Length: 160
Image 1 (cartoon, rainbow, N blue to C red):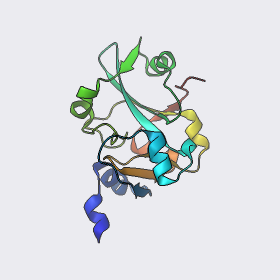
Image 2: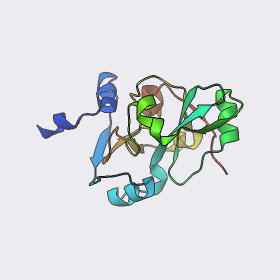
Image 3: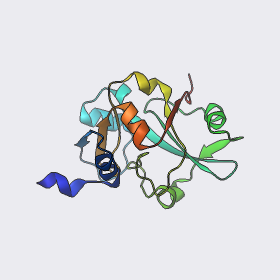
C-alpha cells in the first residue's frame, strides 16, 4: 500500500515505459554525496552514479551520468555534445532548470529533455544506482533502461 505514495516523477515515467526498477530509501534530511549514499545503502560504490547538469557556451543544458568516484572531463564532455566548452550549472539554477533539487537530481523526468550522456563504462554493468528524483531515494535499474528512459547516449566523459 505505502509504496504508491512515494512515487517520484522519474518512477512514474519508468512505470509508463514499462521499465523495471527497484528503489532504496535512506534517512536523509539534506544533501549527502554519492559515496555516503553508497555506504548508507551498503552498495558497491562502483555501481552508484551521480547526475551532473552543465551549461554550454551556447547556453544549452547538458546532463551527464557518471560514477560517483569519477570527475567529469569538461573538454571530453563538451566535444561529445558539440559545445566549445561546458561548466557546471550554478546550484541556484538547478531546480529552475531541472525541477529537481541537489541530491535528488536524476536524468529521468526533468522539466525538459536535455541531451544526456551516460559514462560508457556503465554499459558493462548488470545494474546501476541513480538518484530517484528526491533526497533519500535511489533507483536501481539496468544501464540500458536508464539510457532509454533518459533518451541518452553513451560516451567517455570522465578523467582517466
